[in-house]
Image (cartoon, rainbow, N blue to C red):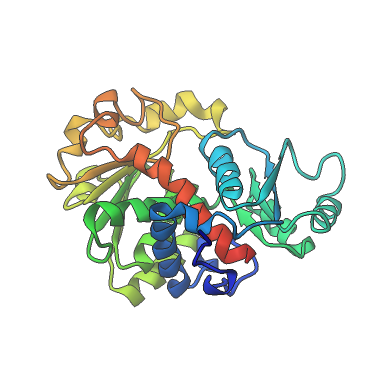
Length: 314
């Protein structure tokens, strides 16, 4: 039976690239979430829309979820992916890499160490660039996360999302995405681990527009008060391994365990972008908690990224 979905029925993004969360307009973000839900419910209706299209996956960092979900998303939409692992712009200039690839593929997904790498790829490439993680943002993770929250609570506006830990790329993307959708956002982090002040300034502007509240504090109890979703991430990310010992000391008291989780609402869900270091940023009991949605988040990476690919490559 022929699909009822055709390419001209998919809303195209106004931006050529997704380098940071705010490259999507509010309307595009809401449409993407609706499309991700549709793709999840009726995957066969969308299984041909990337026929004849190829996407390069440029990964400087190791990956399980990002690599597999993008590969599967592209394949299940009818396209082809080519995986390239290793540093970008070392063997030959990045601008040469970009201008070779844009003659062969229809899009580039880049998982990199530095935000400047995806920005330079976008500068030199004529095909869409998708930021699959940089040191500043993780927009694809945030898309799957808000899809997961909306699935669980059937709404987003008026909910409170609390991130406990480092004010890192995941926290920054969640902060921007949550606030523009009308979700209150709180970050509980140790001294010295605040998010980028420029991104905080953007978040404050979004808060003023949406009416959602923003709280950045070192007090975990204040951050967790009234939280519908409690989120954490590893204390030392890839590239920070040499800081792991010091970070374990600095993050003492910020482990999401039974005691901290109980400070949130009684119906709060637990979230983690994975991989998790059980016994550090969280405990096994919280990872396996009946209100843990970490694997639902992981599944939704596939569906949110399908929606993103359709909106950017159609």
